[in-house]
Structure formats: C-alpha cells, structure tokens
Image (tube, rainbow, N blue to C red; front, side, top):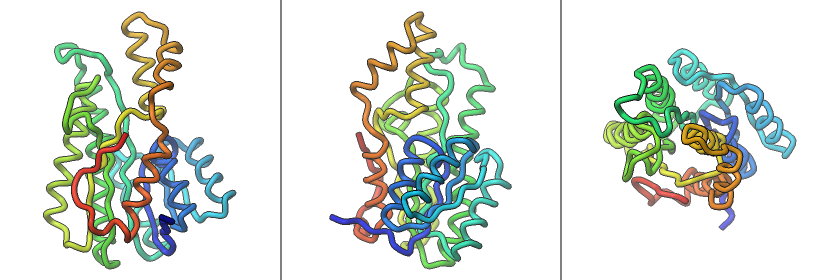
Length: 249
C-alpha cells in the first residue's frame, strides 16, 4: 500500500533524533509538511536538511517541551505557516535513572523525566487540540512505551511518565470530538539515542563495559524507521478505522 500524506500538516516534538526524526523524514517523503520541535538544535537542523534535500517541506523550531510558552509557539508556527494541523506526534522523551532502586531515586531526576515525557505531552495536546478542532480534526499519536503500560522499566521515573501518557490520552480522547483520532503508541526496544544511552548507563553502573553492552544490544534492537512507517500509516486516512493503543516492535 502506497501511503500518502499529501496536503497534510504534521507537528512532531522530539523530531531531532530517534523515532521523531525517522517519522519526520517518513512523513515528508509521503507528502506532508512537517514542523519539527526539539531542544536539540544540531540534530534538529540535520533532520530538517535531510528532508529539504529529499525534496520535502519542513520547518525546525527549537522547542523545550517543558516550557508551555515554547510548545505553544511551536503550534502557532505550524498554524500560521500552513493554516492547519492534521497530525501531532509527541515524541520528545528522556530516560534518566536506569537501574536505580526506588529508595535511592532522586526527586530531581524523577521530576525532570515527568516534566519532559508527561508534562511536555500535556502541553502539546493542550495547544494542538483547539487548532485541530478548528481545522476539521486530525490524528494525535503520543509516544509512550510498553514500560508503564503493560510492564515495568529500568527507570522508576520513565515507567511512571509513560503510564501517565497512556492515562492522559485515554482522558483527552473522551473530551475531543470524533473527528480527532488519538492513539497511545508503545514501541519496543529500538536503537534510539535514548535507549542506547540507557543501556550504556546501566552497564557502567553495574561495572560493565558500556561500549560492549551497546554493541551487543544493537544486534537485537529494532530500527526507528520501522515505527515511523507505522506512524505514517496511522496519520493517513487509510487508518481511520483503527482505535486504541498500538504496540510495535
């Protein structure tokens, strides 16, 4: 099936690397206009340049998703530039405190993860939903994880944040009209900077070689581009009959 997103406008938080970057590139290849938001300007500009080099249309806006003002500005840029938002992908995320027991887990670490993963998703939904409603509806794809939804995690904070994203989606989809379709996306083990960083940090904490741990993990981790293909389908009109949580490799 040749999935096309021609004429659609997509906003992607966390669009500089990992799932967000792969999705931005895939959406642009399918014909969507893409607006990327990320605090990582170096990789964000690289993703933007890749899209433009391949003939796509994109904008990059440095965005700290823990700031409601900056998230609101990202949404405003997309709305003013293209007059609508058809798809929102909330991919911005961090994983901190892997392999730290609950009694040793620092409050500051917990708060920092919740602020990015959960509060950042909340801000994006808060400001994108009214724009989508005004422009006739759309699709919202919130990246969570199997962690916190149907299992645990190496990080107390990460699992808590992703479980929170799942609960947020279930709540908000009861508030929006039927013209806005929402999904919690729960990827498995992928070769993203976030995952590889967690593996390296856990190995170091356990007294093992971080590089060897990452090299070994790469043999079994999936490619973010595979999830991007699923998200491309979900953003398309062909996916209009799909509902609920989506679990991927």
